[in-house]
Amino acid sequence: MTKRTTIFSYWRSALLHLYTWFQDLRARTRYFYVKAFLVFVLLNLACFWWALVTAYPDLLGGEKAIEYVLTGFPVSVFGAVFDSLSLLVTLYIVRRAIESTSNLSFFGYLSVDLLIAILATFWVLFVFIVSGWLVDLILAQPETLADRKHLYHGRLLGVLRDPFGHESIRNMYFGIVMGASALIPTLLHILLACRSMLLSGLSLVGLRRRTAG
Image (cartoon, rainbow, N blue to C red; front, side):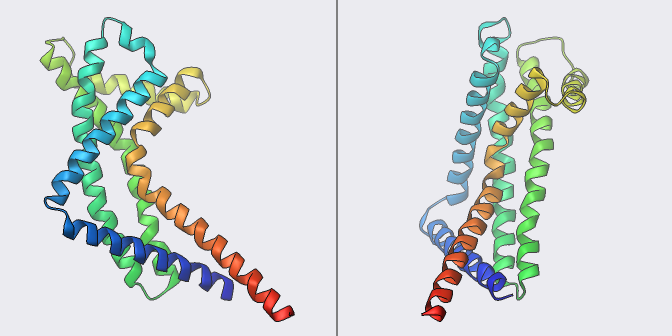
């Protein structure tokens, strides 16, 4: 019981320190949320190009190269909208977690970020459906929103039917890279939890040595 409490104490302390630093940065930065939105746009654009170049480099040399190049821009904007909203939700969750009086409540609040990561998966699908449709309108290509929905629905079913197939792995890799920015809060919580367990373990070892001595 002592070890568990110590882990949460380290975790809560680290999260409070990070939250305080972030709020101080926000207070010192003019137009913070506007700048944060622009950073998210650039981050999503970088993720899009990294995923495209590493997973589908052949698409950049085909007839639809211009379509994929243009798709990156609405994808980045829509992705930044989700990331900005998830930032506000995460800040609220972290504040409530820090203010919680029990370890169970603390862990429960932080677990909500897992739901954000799951929602990001469906958001990525929605974004690519709408973005592809918008680009088709700009390029005057005969493709409807229903056609785009059918295309990505087929890719999703392909992943479910054959998750270890070559094309499925490429699609999953692309989706994970595109959702990387939404995974940041979850990965941060995992990192802080691992750090807290390590510090707690080292503290327990030191306590036992002092007791034995």
